[in-house]
Length: 271
Image (cartoon, rainbow, N blue to C red; front, side, top):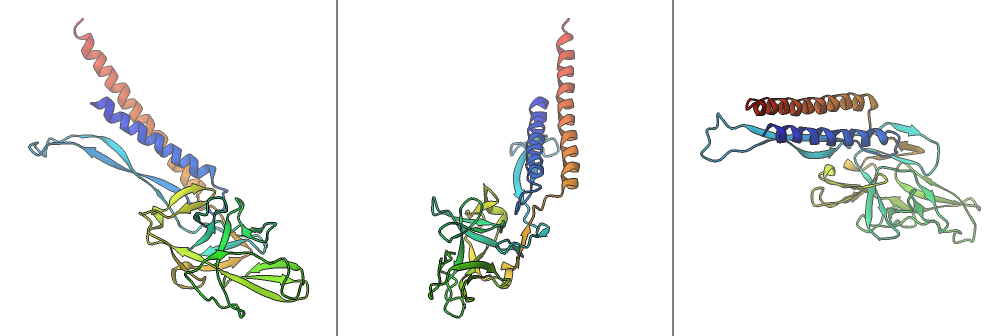
């Protein structure tokens, strides 16, 4: 029994080492959120067993929980770099699948068709606006697309994103046009979001459905233009965790070695 009990400890330490390694590998990934491993003990006993004699039989990984605390904000000066100062998520739409994705990585750019996209080609979603730049609906989302020319035929000259979320296109004739307001998403339980890689998440039954709102409203947070949110991984904290996980692995391996020696001693008694 001691072999299997210690084996669960070895497997758990191995899982924790993998999680810590993943955190360290993404210490420089924009918008990345670190994870931590949570364990639980395993106890087995029948209804007729003496509760004072029930013995534990090991441990198991209860969950690998994400930590969505705000990472350091880095000033970049780029007009389409956006950081969220709050709990919201940017809403993106995959061009290939049409699926809705959520991210904290605000490193955006404009593609050849005028769409505001991330590094993977996913399109930023915005709320529609009227001629004055006021939001007309917070339930309808659309791709942020910048026309190559304005109504007067002037060529596109540049784009900015304000702290209020307004995506404003500038044209060669000196006019500005608001094409939409960045749509921010919020979740009841963000730790239930499913990781997809590239600092993207998707909604699940555990996270609940997304609620949408404008920047500077409630829990959605405000926007910081010309800045990016870096990874929230603390390298010192992870290295300490790495040492602890290594010690746990060694301790469980030693327990297996001790059980082996005891078994060998009992077998040798026959000789």
